[in-house]
Each structure stands twice: as structure tokens, then as C-alpha cells.
Amino acid sequence: PVLKFDKLLDALSRLVPRFRFDLPPYFINNARALSTLEGIAKGLDPGFNVLEIMYPYALGRLLRNPSGSPVVERTVQALIRDGEGRVDRSRIRRVLRDSALISNKSRRRVVWDIVKTRPGRRLVGGVMKEELRDGGL
Image (tube, rainbow, N blue to C red):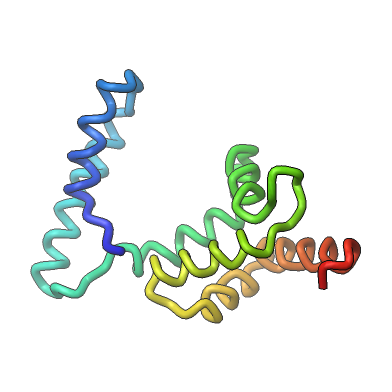
């Protein structure tokens, strides 16, 4: 998949009034700036994919959760657990597949990118411990 900021901004501008939520002015300005930068990058390199560039940063932020946001923590847990709170291997496989697809990296590389961060190691260790405890591995 390829993310196009100009298309994203257009879709967002149609959704905001429909669902009546406010976006801070800096959000719109940042989105416009990213759209412009993406256009320049694509002019220089037609194969440029912003998701490939953003992936390592976004993955790191998600795993580190530097603000300690409960929303981010719940999101990460919802990505890997079923409705009863148990680790769901099919969800983990889906996350790895989707991350590999979005980032244009192999699943093995995605796993390595996760494991090389301290929070990623904690996440993987916790999942493995739970799987061993519950007889899943």
C-alpha cells in the first residue's frame, strides 16, 4: 500500500464536518506540509513510499509509548489479544504480515525491529511467558 497525504487530507476534510470533531490548526498545517514534501520526494523519486520511511519511527513510538498513554497500551494489546484477553497467534501473524506489507520489509525484519527495542523485548517476553504458562508453545 501507498499512503498519499493529499488524498488523506482530502478525505479527512470531508469527514471532519460530517462527524463534528475538531482538529487543531497545527494538524491541518502539518498534513499540508507533509503532502507538499511527499510531492517533492515523489518528483525526485517516483518510487518513494512514505510508509517505508515512517515505519521504523511509528513502530518505535508505539512500542515505547513514551507518554504512557493508556489508549496506546490498549491498542497494542487489542492488536495481539482476543476478546477474552488471551494472546491470539492469528492476530500476531496478521500484525506481522500487515507491518511487513506496509513497510515493504520482511516479517523477519519486522520481528527484529520489535525485538531490538527494550519495550519490544518486554512485549515478546510477556507473550512467550503467557504462551508457555497456558501451554500454547
